[in-house]
Length: 256
Figure 1 (cartoon, rainbow, N blue to C red):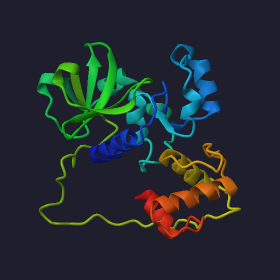
Figure 2: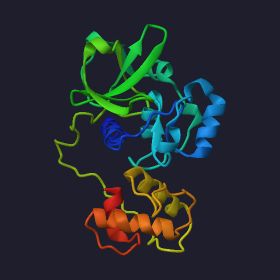
Figure 3: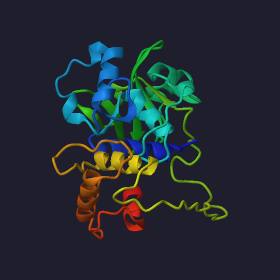
Figure 4: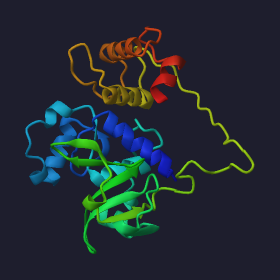
């Protein structure tokens, strides 16, 4: 289970990357295919004319921003859908381990705040360091606003996250350090294929790096000229060795 601290990191990253609001989405990479699916499922929420300009980026609705954090362990990763946890704002509140009206809110980082009434919650955000991070709507995308208790009616500790170390406490008494887990990542270069290439393509799109024609990368798992171009530009922008190869140095920077 991810922590409240990770939820805060995740939502801050979504705001920093100016991720768009797409109804019924939880962090998928936007594309023409995804748009067609969502328009078919929820046509009244997909009448705007700017969706195509947002292709290649992680997209969320308000509850989806929280589910995206629950369904991945990398703030720039692609969440893995879990039907058993596909909850809207009302269910997120109802299943919460701790909750109450906003006048009892203890302002713990990573707790959720809600708008609505006793029966229905219409919107949800995440409280972090005196601000609320939320997917506000299609005209706004993911935003951060100063916490104002007059704008929220309820709070809850989402049951998808652990708040035991929400304020940075933990192993102070015995000064134990968490076990470090290392994962060997493959070197990716022109001609490489597979899931790791898809991850790099999605991450590059999320960071705003496009191909030589200014188009978003196809997340197809094929490391071709377009992906190589985006990798090279990423390395140049991040002051890395410019080689067009996703080596250890580049992986470390991307996943930092």
